[in-house]
Length: 64
Image 1 (cartoon, rainbow, N blue to C red):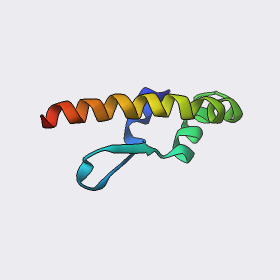
Image 2 (cartoon, one colour):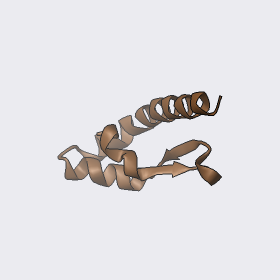
Image 3 (cartoon, rainbow, N blue to C red):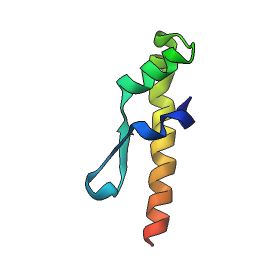
Image 4 (tube, one colour):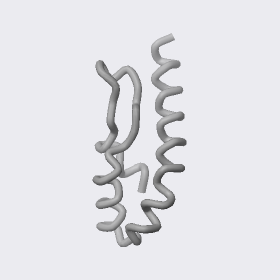
């Protein structure tokens, strides 16, 4: 599901870092995919943290 949330990223000014996901949109997407909203809301923060870390590491390596 997280791979489908690419368009729901919240970016810092100048797209210098990813600061999070639009959680409302992500939960809505999960519900539309057939997942229970409560389960998505419970698991999403951990997935979001990993996604943000990986994307920011990739952005930092591109700027070096």
